[in-house]
Length: 276
Length: 276
Image (cartoon, rainbow over all chains, first blue to last red):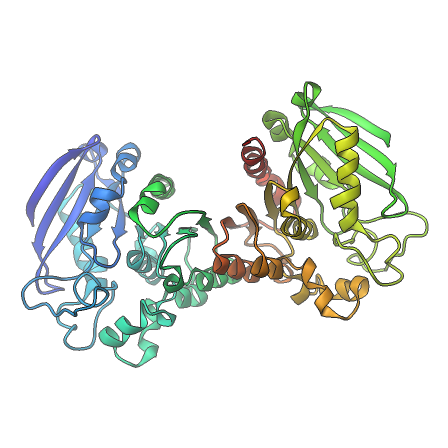
């Protein structure tokens, strides 16, 4: 992999790398923050999956996670939200195609050859950072909006790969939302039985999660009807899923919301990642 | 009112009083904890409503609230859960009649003359403690199980009277639960339109609450099917109600659960009661 940039940030270093992805068939870019503790020994890692229209850069520059990761001794990985570049299919809409990979493996054309973000995150990028960086095989995962959907669904489908789980205003029930139905139809086809593996509310009802979950939601989130927190809250509570569901007055869907609770999420993960 | 007992407890004093209740038509007993700050000036007050089979005594002796109330400078009031004594109707079941007042005003016989716990708490006992004790007209309310139901419904119906609200494993949707339907039928009659004013999930859907709400629930609560947290969670989340809903692995319905989170609740209320 090729170093694109590296910057000192708090006591650690914020880097951006590019690498040729076999899974996506194009070059992919990701960001990684290494806390000072990583200079001496491998550290646990928190994955942060971004939302619609984002790249690896948004949370890296606007989330404010690095201060807490530096204090707590955990690495941060910020993947891109889709493949991009020459030959990658796209759509005029902001919520389909480039910037809108939905952390799934597309089975339909023209998306199938490149839009394999599920396997990219769970397998290829995971193997790469474990191989090339001072990162311990001990993972937490979080994300915002579409990335919160990614975090919840990837964690619930791969419980042995993740120790800790949280999300910021995730898309919680995409198979019943306009942030989901259009994309799943395009990427996965009209057979809705193939969609449930990518729906956090359905996965919660059917399988749940082995640990506790932290989810923050803004009460004034302008996209809340698309997120469907009530569906996930009902499913999680009915299952008796250990969790903390917080609805915050006045907060919207922006990075002003995400950064307001970044410290809580880093601490949530750090407590669990450091608890051997 | 007559002093029944008084004990130093942490830096303050735990007292029990008896008084003739006009509303309930019998003598009623309640407990009050005054923190050391109340020796100098009136302090805000947190009401704690107890659950089925309890008296004023259970939370006073097993809840462990006094330490935090002493530190935070707030009073605690523990009312009884029903009228009791000569002439008060009762039932063989533990969940109807004495010890099971459900914080409502009964309209049906033989309950109507004495079972007026809603008015007793909201009006008579409130006026009494404000008149007789160094308590400021600034109130928070919490409770456990049937008392959590009481706290949620009383607060949502009287938003101007309460600053802060929380509950421990409340009965959240009694009109759809065996902890509710039998009692509402007996106390209120078969016309279910009279029940909704005493159902926290319905009140949440229709009115909500002006502040944020903290609710703790044990994941291993043996009565969880009767509490219906999923109904309240769905209603609150759908409404975008500012709240924190926590489900705790391993915790049951007992006072071991309540006392485990007593500090969090006292702090929750103290932050809001002291914020002028």
